[in-house]
Amino acid sequence: MKVNTDGVLLGAWAAIAPQVRRILDVGTGTGVIALMMAQRTEGFAHPVLITGVDVEQVGEARANADASPWGGRISFLQADVRQYAPSERFDLIVSNPPFFVSELLSPDAGRMRARHAVTLPYDALRDAAARMLDPAGRFSVILPAAEARLFVDVCKGTLVPVRRTDVRTIPCRAPKRVLLEFAMAGEDAALPGLRHDELVIGTGEHECYTEEYRALTRDFYLKF
Image 1: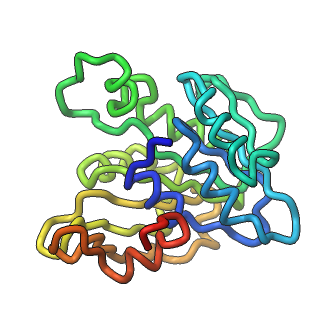
Image 2: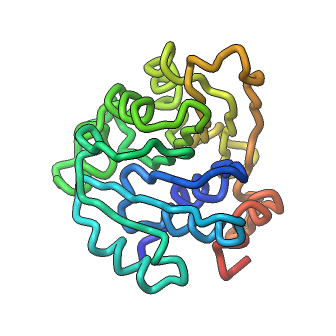
Image 3: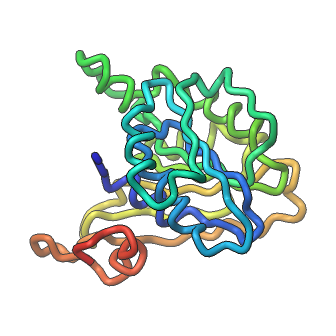
């Protein structure tokens, strides 16, 4: 299974409230984040159902889930999330979306769809999340730092950021990724202020990781 740091970060960081029963993974790819959601909710008193949606084929994600202990709680659907119409709303939506909006497009069609916000523009992702999210639910996403600013602006009036973690690869470098958690804008009066913190992945030495990164992700990495 192909695993990338962005997916692991989001899957480990996204807050899962005890009352969560339905989770949606938008742009599920190989199903890594969906599997992490299933692993993290294994001990819940009630079953938590996870759905992974992707515009590309989901056969690899299905095979990965079937090879895990949690395959029975995960379903996958090949669909454009803009047309996806579930029968119920979700308590938590997570997404590691195609994110570059300002760089040159890749000549490779598959890589372009995976990395550039062409098939899923930011306003479409915002609208899909708002349409399918329970009023008390949360939407979590990971983006590059510059694109995160754009996405927050796009979401104004629809989704409100309530939690943010800036991610540095090593201490001396500027944040490379931003983890964001949103709530529905209609709940503004009851929302807490924005919780803003920082996470550093590496110490700066070769293959040496900070204790905070190890603590966040150790349940998903055998090497930790």
